[in-house]
Length: 499
Image 1 (cartoon, rainbow, N blue to C red):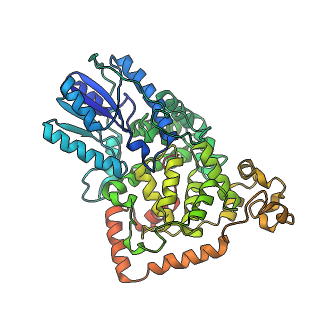
Image 2 (image 1 turned 60 degrees about the horizontal axis):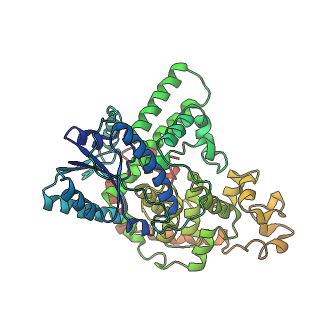
Image 3 (image 1 turned 135 degrees about the vertical axis):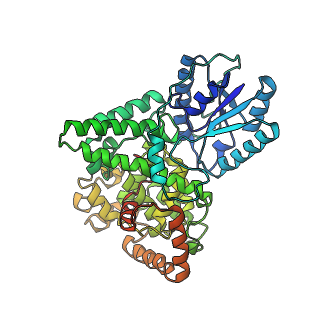
């Protein structure tokens, strides 16, 4: 029996592991719900709820092919042992996964089990991420070549008689509902609708609307959670984008679509570019990419500052609006993701990992490779990227000029005049609002930014820092010209691409 182990690839379309396994014999399509994983500090109820919807959709699609999805709850090695005794395991098939530290260790255990039981494990690439990559040279070319390969059709399957098992609820896994009342819905049908609506209607203003937390909600692709859980393959999205670009070019219209699709296509590359960083250096989930920054921030966070930031109660209206929105929707546009992380790291001077974990739990589209690479970039610890310290007041004025976004999520400021919405401490009636209905700012955003900038740049002096930075560039940086690379990495501030 061939076991196809579904992980973050919850689809039957363009699923090479499933197609190749079906060519070898009867297939048991398997998803293992691992309770230990779902109790980790970077996962949450909203992740499971989205994944569960994708699993229901996957089970329906597999049924149409002739075989139900087999779901088991427990440690994956116990599940594989049980299947080996019940039906025999002649091969294990899965897509490669660049996950968090827990899944990395889990996969090493699976590899050891396969060697001990003489079961070949076939891991198939599903993104443009390269295993055992010696050099970044030629990476972009290989990405293009991989994405241009034919999309494989879903194979016909034969029933195996293995009991399918129920898909557990969040309550079954002891997951506490986390208030994501407006999160996106999972599953293949939802993914296809989101992709179609973006490429044919919503995405026309993508380039100019992506920075606004209001406009971006409709103009961005919103494909990131579907890519994170594999309801769509990156190849499917890329080829659909290329096809739409050809159509737009042939039509020759100057209606904004050309620029929008070009920008989006670039971000599809960045999706895999950032995951590649974690693939090459798994330690960046836990340690500074540039070790020169070790010890620059306290390892234990200021609990009051972290809690205020996480709850959206810093007294900085635009920051609080973004965090409160994220709690409810599970999504935030790229510039605001960068800003809230930068505020935590610079203005509040928190070590990046605790706020990074908070954001991981809140992002429905949490993708470890992109997430931790970007968390470090926005915290200034990569040693190679531009240090970008956002002014949260100016960002509010620039990105929410009418105040509609801020007022929706921070209704306590209803009595503050529009002129002072982003800096209510300057309003004449500040004393009636601050410290009563709404918090007084927990930090002075100007002085803390200045102090952070001095601390970060002080580390960057000296030959030892530069030598390590050169090694990071060689291992992780894009192979574009230095000027273009620095410009693109500085402007690609998404924490979970593409959005």
